[in-house]
Image 1 (spheres, helix red, strand yellow):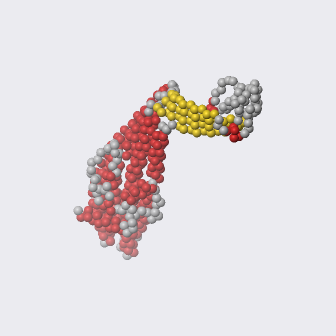
Image 2: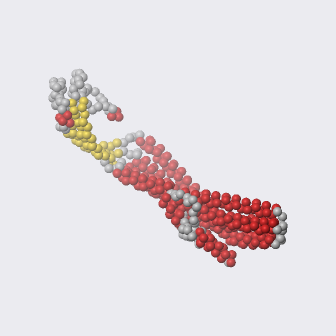
Image 3: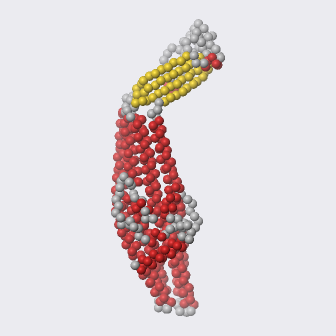
Length: 465
């Protein structure tokens, strides 16, 4: 119990030192990451685009209404014979069949209103809307699972940076002890109480401690940069000031039993919606087997600069006047009902449906693999939690023993009862014990985070804060 309280106040003092400035809490880091991270913002736009496409799919059921007006100038020579306007590469010149070519030309105009409505196609329009709606659900679940995974990544980066900062502090403490030891060694060497080689060994220990401290600072800056990237912000030059107070305690829900709930796991839900979208596409493809029933109507007005008596007897009965040529003097209307059915479509659609159903089976296999992996991970992380807790309980004992051993060897060396090798070994043992303590305490929270990630319940982790 005394060890626990000693360690608690040690962390409390460290926390107070850090929070002289405004510390970045884990929840604040998560809020900034969800608001700023580019991938999340991109997927939010993709989800909004899918919603717009649902509206577009619904409006495809509306009839086509076309307005057209053209005013032309040309000749109207014609001949008897068949013609096919292949891909629109023909001219609709209508006039009498004259015995020879002439170049009489006048203005003409065509005004057209056309409406076409495919009012029944065996549910094709509805199925297309359902496909679009399934795409919206998929894109939204993709955003949700990306947010879930990103929260896990940010939390892991936060814990890694916190561990890196505490390791740097441990290395700083080790360097301070090495410097203090060197002062003591030099004093004894100058007074002739110890050989000069002790001073060299002390210098080597200081250099080693300084290199370890420098490497730890590099690692700390690297982890700070990773956290900044995940938060979507620029890394501060002097690093982040983190809240380390929670590390000093055991999570309340560390031993809670959890199971994977497929309907709530964000990643599994995304894979499930991939299957649903594929099945909706298969249903839509099936509707392409059937005919389309249409209603259509046309209203047409025409104007011409050629008079009604233009022909074999009077080929001068036309005018070049623009206003006369474009004035609509004739009108026609047409109403109709039609059906279109490509009888070879079922041969192609059959393979489309088959291919889509095979894709659905493949997506189901991927879902099963992910579900099995998450189940196995949950079992693994329960074991990791037990091991992390075992190390958590052992770490203070190791630090206490290593600290006492170092103090003992230091006192014995100052009194000429020990040598420099024993002291440096004790110094190394204390540094290793402090490092192991940092890792052990951090691993408890990392294990809980991994358990939350595998179960799909991020609240299992974040509710501890």
